[in-house]
Length: 276
Ligand SMILES: Cc1ncc(C[n+]2csc(CCOP(=O)(O)OP(=O)(O)O)c2C)c(N)n1
Ligand SMILES: [Mg+2]
Image (cartoon, protein in one colour):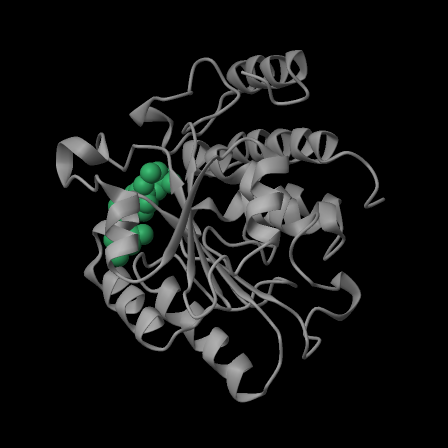
């Protein structure tokens, strides 16, 4: 993969891979994967210091997909970044491959298994604190779902990170407004979300979560305030890019028929730059 290629092209291919995997034997988490694509592409193609040929390099940045159900978006991004062959994505949903429904460490580039929601931020804090102990300038990034934030352990980790002044920790919230069964604000409301993170001692910014340049600028410049961890609230659309899925609760999981997959690919190809 040529890093100079525009991230629009990469993000387009990642979205297509997501659709292809959702058309595989088991289907996949379509909506929350599509809402995270631009965040993942911005991170892996411009922010994270990682080396696909030496993915356990001691000086690497760490990334955890705390919303591990979006594994197919992570796999597609890692493959496009060169961590393993793109052809391997075709094995998703079969018993033969190593690409499980949630990320596991057998996959090059996956730091820890995630997907039991609520645990990623504490684990990411651990990476951040270990970097500090090693006197290394590594950063630790964690991508969380907004519904996931209803897990109390997220806020325990948020408190701990601020108390530890872990300014090498960055939380990104995929703020798509939807969780498994409905709107977050109808179930267990999170607003005012930015103020909550601020009150917990974090530096906070908000961004259009499908604007990869804005994401890259914000994430690349963290920490934003010395001594404070950084929280980026990325406003996204669940099912982004697919008219029949965008903004719909029902996009959460999909086993796409051949007809729907073709429709999805056509919709993506109509807007290869990701414009909605
Ligand atoms: C501890 C735990 N409880 C329940 C689930 C099942 N689950 C998977 S995704 C999901 C909804 C998460 O919503 P959100 O974090 O907003 O994800 P997104 O909208 O980005 O898909 C749930 C309840 C889980 N993975 N872990
Ligand atoms: Mg959500």
